[in-house]
Image (cartoon, rainbow, N blue to C red):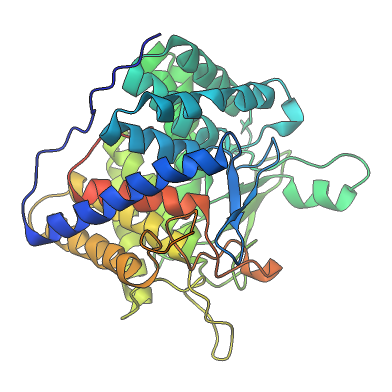
Length: 394
């Protein structure tokens, strides 16, 4: 089909000094994505290198679509069909995911919402819609009816029994972002099962991953046969009883978005609790530490990706609340976004292929202080939400 070259941005023009500053940064992001597309081609960034270039994904990496998501966001402003074509050409990789059961896990929402659903919403491309609906079917099939949750990860085969034991009956905070694919599929098809699975997983997450004080576990383990809840743990945080900052951010964004989609008051109450706890844990920090509960003497690495996800989620929370509360969440979102702009922005750094420094991919495994494609995607989303834009793949 022919793609329109008309810009598709849908926000009312904002003229305050802050908005002008945010627009200038967003313009640089759009320019950087357009420029780097000629270097990156059809590869998918996975994690940054010390020289500010990228290592790239294998075909089944969970971050495979975050650069495509940036391409679709940049397309909204430029109307450049080359960006849309580059994003859509990556769908050959996504077909491979759908044709390989072992390559599918709970991250199907990340992978298909940011590329195929975004394409469908922006251009009406029928093949992208069909791929996204296939992915929603596969995500729905991961639902464990005994425990009312979507199974996160897969076992790695009989040669790794320890992996099978680790992943069995496990949910993680990140999955809240993937529920958007199921809600979208429900809206598209009218099939109530998509929404039922998403609602059930969100309710289980609310009751298990979110602690009474509004902090969160990264993962929760259930008996995979009976569904009985067993214990909360971490996988990428400092300790089981700490609070991994990107996990907290996933949950803020996820529950805010679920409330915006469904109107379920429990989701709004949960998003508020998570956001209030995060505000306290942040203290005076401009960019979150990789874990909010680090003992003295532990590595104080930043995680710009947590800041970007949290900022975008808080803008959603501001949109779905009113009055002084809305202003409060928006101010916190702007504060986090300002921290990224002042401390981590790479859009004026010559030779950098990404947008943000200071990302913590996995501190326990030694991956930190780097560019991350998901940090970059949410940075653009937060900038756009700051300026009033509302058109995303979610």
